[in-house]
Image 1 (cartoon, chains in turn blue, orange):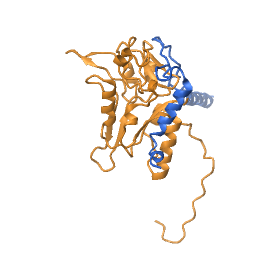
Image 2 (cartoon, chains in turn brown, red):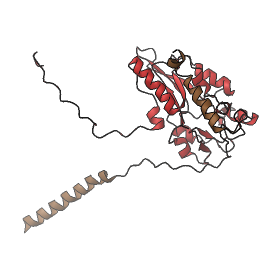
Image 3 (cartoon, chains in turn orange, green):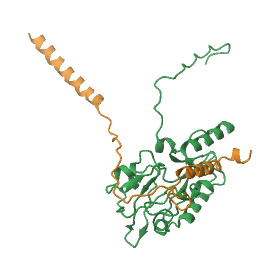
Image 4 (cartoon, chains in turn green, cyan):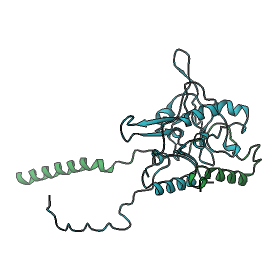
Length: 78
Length: 217
């Protein structure tokens, strides 16, 4: 009888220990999930909405792509 | 249109500070504010490296996440900008930024902070493009002129690349392939994220060949 009670108490203690030890494994990631902020400021106009490009997005993209390649010296020196 | 990104090639940067000077001159940046700076690691030690640092216009910008007045926004091209009319100069963004990009003009004897100032990727701010108001608050808007950031365009060694992410990544890849070393890009993974590491390699590595001859240590 005493032995059974002892085993029960030991089992309960072990179970409690395991539960406490495993509690850390259930921790959720603490890095916040990014959500787009609610921008409160003034609206900005896109870069192609300028005196140079007059709203022509395609022309602006072509200009930027061409400009990008100026940074590739392998093409500049070829 | 791909996202605009910066990439600094530490193998090429010679710490000339040309990018810093060009930025200050182009945008008439006030005294005490450096939108871009060059950081040298292991200065004077063989193998030292320099990197040009500014706002990296992060994909998941922490400054934007912590701003209490929500003055940050991201443009269609992925440039992180802010509205100075809304900024209260609290400095939260400075603590959140892993690159130390937000700068605050100090005025007076009591260290009173002004509104935050940072690299705009030469894209101005929420004012009429290329207007005087935009220049005074945010500096010149080169993107609206069809140009790229002045720091990258005038870099003498082309260590600093700026522009469409896929294009500059291609330029850098070709460069690394030709020189055969220095493929690590400083700040790239922090600012733009990294692909999830595969749990297992796609092709299992071959087993090491058994040693032939020679004493085993």
